[in-house]
Length: 417
Ligand SMILES: [Zn+2]
Image (cartoon, rainbow, N blue to C red; front, side, top):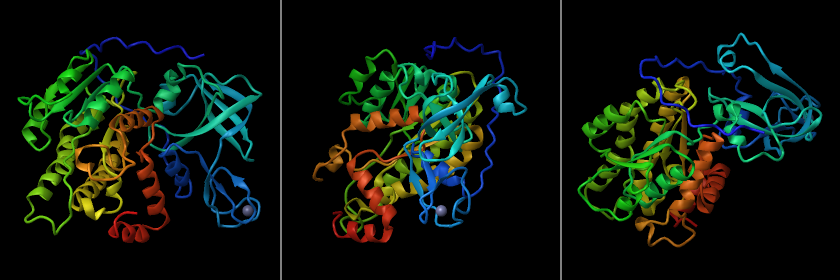
């Protein structure tokens, strides 16, 4: 039974913020297959194409037949806890700060025996256990043993919180509350127990639908923020940068059409100003503050969320310049992820399909409801994953893109179906 996490007391401003220590993060190239699946919330293991053996730890060749054909296959993770122990001492700085730490040996139903971090709600050995692959603070995959039936508070387990970015009791900045997605995001974060949600709005003098109602929530505070204006971003970072635990960048400019339907570059520039340079400005102003507070108590700074688009993977000519701006933002988000990783801050990239908003009015369904997108983001924060593709369209496009990007390019050029 996990004790529910209590709201941490206010920080003593005189105390120095500790520096972060990360768990060991060196992995060979083969082992990164485990990390790639864990980044999407899946447990995948090498499965021999020749003899069907499932193996762990990852190796270059099959342990049974020496075949090198070892595709990664998603596993159920069900298994039996054989033995357990509790670490009371560690020479590793990360674990030394977090002792005692529970470990177990599990035989997976799929075959291999694995060493896992063990959630506090898993019973004593022998018992059934559910293995999952999670990203740790260093952003690398680790295996964790979870109870088959968890209690309502199981996410409050300190081990699990270390591997996730739960918004509970945290302070979040949603960069743009003008859009239905931004507003749904703020509501979802409040519902998830966020302590405070700052909601940016670029034009505070305008009465925007929904925003005033949102501001009546006690956890929500509207703040002026125009991501196209460096001074505006810097001013807000100066005011709240040292308190933000999670940044959710919902600022987005979306116009239809590709190249030939318009003259000039004004619209494309405006899209880049928000979708690409906006992210760059935010990252420059808020990134260092987040990194500096990555070890600041139980509700330390933890994550950065980018609202991208499935069109970032392959250009959808009907929304051609928008797709290009999102592709640029994706590339920059990968750079941000690399720079944030040494501080243990997770960058979550969100690739939704068409959202049910004013710029997709002419697009036939299925379209993703803003509230569904927002709950997918909150779930991803709680699960600690890196990439999500919410909605049926995004899922289908992702599959087609993985199968053959060139075929998808031709299909999108022909109208997207
Ligand atoms: Zn084999």
